[in-house]
Image (cartoon, rainbow over all chains, first blue to last red; front, side, top):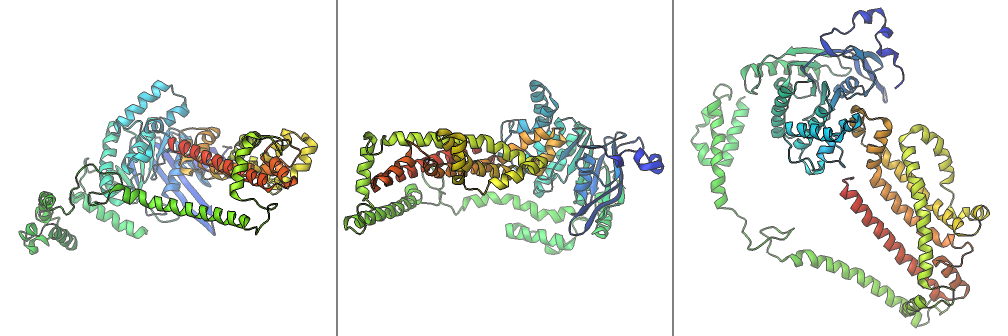
Length: 271
Length: 340
């Protein structure tokens, strides 16, 4: 990675320096602009600003094609924004790092590796000793409830199990922030509900900052401490809800439903 | 809400009419939210159904163990459904071969084509067996020719794989390397390997080296192209996963790119082997004293079509065996490592 002037606070001039990320945010992005040159200049994000507090479960809600994945890629450091900055614990993000783990919708497991090898991948790149790798991998495989499947290959697993492996892999390399890109989008409804429940259980056991991207309003309310709604392209932050319903939440709880109605009213406007 | 509630009631109707009839429709149509017990009741009733259903199972139970590919309702024996169609296919293939050889034999027997142009298959078999223990008229046993050719082809093929695969992978992964190597490769690629013969002789003399060089050039091209394409097909999400976990670009190339390319690399190897084997005869046009290509040339000079045909058939059989072996190796390697 070369030097990226636009990502340093100094490079942004006095106004940006004043708006340097408040310390309450572990991950912060400001004025993100990303565009792609297709047939036309396609602006995906335009002046997107978002702060994430430590150990918060933040759900980013938005319709399809609105730039949710691009946002996550920027936060992860996989994509360089044309303007704006992303900062992690006060330092600008300059590239991908194991401190910000990603869980993908399409599982993205290495098909030629067993569950255990997949989970231990990040540790191997870090240079962790073999015995330690196995211990950590076993711990997280147990956490996601896949003990006994260590030697199985991804092709033998169901969609839900694959996503558990993806979750265990993201956890195993010890990230402080977990970025989840519609992780349950490819699962059937039943598995989806089960996985949502399980994700919360895991999150209660091992608190991490989570940024969970979804297009499903119910999922957003069920999981999030805070839900932010993205507008359609070019995406901006449209609205924000703090959700204080205690866990475990029920889909049929009147408060839940009222909130759902309220969000869907705004969600419809977004489309 | 009303609509949803009615829907669930209808679903219950379909599953168990008896249970649904207990529930007056007017009550069931009330919104789920206000009276959740009433709205849900018919659905719960359907839990009792599986017990009665299993009694009237329409599928008859077969006696004894069940073969793979056979259901309980399938009464026909395994060999009839499984082996018989295959046997018919095999018979058709055999039939076409038999007709071909009969026509060939007939053409020679009735003198439609003279003995100096074509010999019948019966004589080919005779000569084939004879050549195993007979050095004349071309100076070596058939197996000696075959071994010599095999050695040459494998040498050229191996060298091409060792150079071509890494080259293709690097070109596919590193754009800068591609910019450097691509123009040279694109110029060399369309030149037929045979056109290299004069230069090969000038550079390497007329020994094994020159011949292996020609074969190398022929089999080098598919190796490069397929490894290049293979590594370009690497799933970008896997690359992102690897990078997120802090892997360097070279590690990603080695651990993600290369395994992803392996199915395509094997395709390249098969094409390469094919190219190596088909260029063999051309390479052996170079001054040679052994080899199947040389044997064919001698047959032509001595006006012995039988020798030529035996040489050709040996090339054909050995080529088929080689590519069969490579396919087997590929299947074993790719499936045991879950590479595709």
